[in-house]
Length: 308
Image (cartoon, rainbow, N blue to C red; front, side):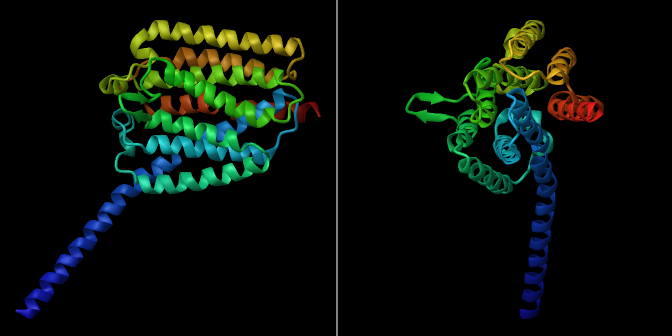
């Protein structure tokens, strides 16, 4: 009797451990994918801050760029970890990922980034995207009043542009002699990121429609939304060109020319709805949109070395 009980107890424990092991393995892969999913956008964001320094003709501060990248990583990872309906449809590969792991890693990255910026008098800038990110994913509910930035037509894109435009211009602009250059940088990156976030909405039309989220491509339709993006793209680069000609910002032809050409190309190619994104299309999208700042910095470095 006792022997049977021991055997049964041992067998039960073995099954329990096996179940826990299988559960751990099943969550490990999506968790790693979740933690990796924001690395490129984080690196790209850090380089955008570097580009902002270049445009304002200010020596780039490496640690400020690093801090900005860490905070961008933290905010985007937290956003993707949130269990919202549209993300279940748009990112099935992240299903089952550990939110606890994402929270811990994001918190560590944010605290390091905030500490660096705080040492340079930029603590308010450090908390700006975190606050906006919370309003974007969760919102604030007081009685019948519910403020959530993710649902409005174009509001999300506007908030993304304003938040990250202010974040980039704020980190680099603190060293500027006047407010004019940081304001131009804010307009440039604000509009660029508004355009980029809207392009990503084209990819997520199916999930957003199911979730009842009224993004610009859902409400305006493909053609009108695309015309809007082309118009904003031409406007922001006209502002940048005039600012360079009037010497309000530094003469950086690589930034102006590459940004203008690649922007036209990726609006044309990726402002389209697709049912299933192929690996080839994903690679092109990541290179052209998320990798834009990396390519600009790389081309500029090569050109400068050749001239030198």
